[in-house]
Image (cartoon, rainbow, N blue to C red; front, side, top):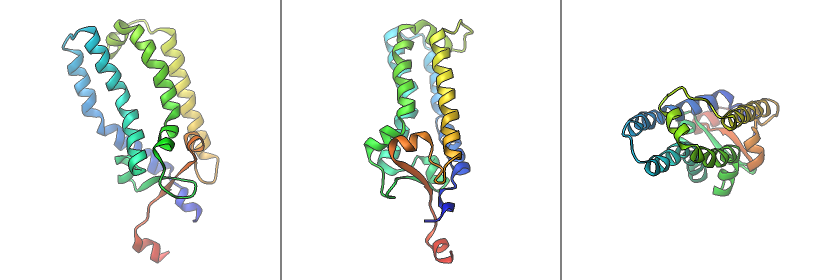
Length: 179
């Protein structure tokens, strides 16, 4: 396999943008649900599901298909290092940095449910220090992901190293014959 097959940075950026756009309707649903003034227990359950759905989408789609909808449209696929399909445990490992932040965020947000609801509604409230720490940690993790991806031959990001995976371009059969 030639190195060109691993040059996926811009395709991955495009795939991420497509996947984000797919979840815009959920953002609109969030706004509507937040306007309903539901009981706190109902609101808490909704917010846990709503804040976890993108991560679950990523895990399930990668585990079952090796691709999200964005990756399908940009013609890239996640495979293991032997080029076989990744397994569900690998998909979970691949999203483990996000899972760590989600597992830290959810309990803290539930303890501070009034703040979380106000924050979701766009109210300018004092931001707790734990939220800033988690946000800074997530930002640093994203920088490490990008730096890792741009500094190795197969363009593997940190989460690819954790899961033993790599993202490859998909080619048409006619393109393969021409090469």
